[in-house]
Each structure stands twice: as C-alpha cells, then as structure tokens.
Image 1 (cartoon, rainbow, N blue to C red):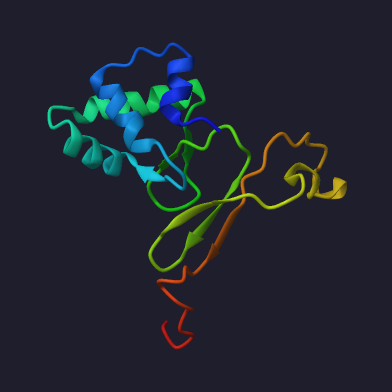
Image 2 (cartoon, rainbow, N blue to C red; image 1 turned 60 degrees about the vertical axis):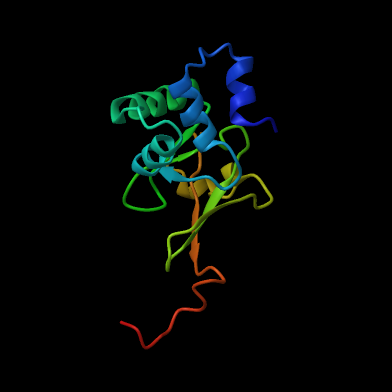
Length: 143
C-alpha cells in the first residue's frame, strides 16, 4: 500500500505546505489521531498552521476517501489514514491505544439472514477491546 502522501500526489491534490504537514502527521501504520493531536503535531512542524486549516484539511481528506473518521474508539473522533484496506480496530481499555486488525473472513456475511430484518448489509464496524501489554491484565478488584 502506498503512503498517504503518495496517494494524494497521485490524485493531483494541491499540496500546500499546510496540507503537506497534515498529511505527513497522518502518514503511517496504526495512526488514529484526534484533530487536536493532529493540530499539536502539525504545529510542532509548522508553527504558523492554524486550527481552522487543520480541521478543514481533515474534512477534505475524509471527503476524498483518503482518511477515515473513526468514532467508535473513544470519545473524540479519530482520523485513520488506512482507508483503502478493510480493517477493524483493537482498543486498549487502559491507555486507549488503537491498532488496526485484519481478521479473516468477510464481515458482511457474519450476520445471519434472520437478524438482518430485510436490510441489505453494506458495511460493518467492529471494535475489539482489551488491554495492551503495557497496561497488563485488568485487576478484577479495581471497581
């Protein structure tokens, strides 16, 4: 899979300095940043970038289908550049770390016909939850 910058260049997306910085911040594997995290990282690279530019660029990347807006992994929406490969998310209940996972099989076929209520299923969002190695197993005595 090509990286986000290569995909955007291939689309002929106008690459201003501000857009480039946002795309660079989002580029990579297991990237699931909030808009504020993108802003903080972009500002560290390009101090004059504005909040509005970051938010507008994120909206444009989502509209282009180059970044996925994920709302099932925490309270704030996160932005995932892994837009061209079907995947689900694994979220740590301790620290909130998010990883892309690619379980086998077609998730569209998992729901039995009787549970579809006549719907034509066109998409599936699955979020796995657990504890990452750094957080360790959950203590059953913590309530």
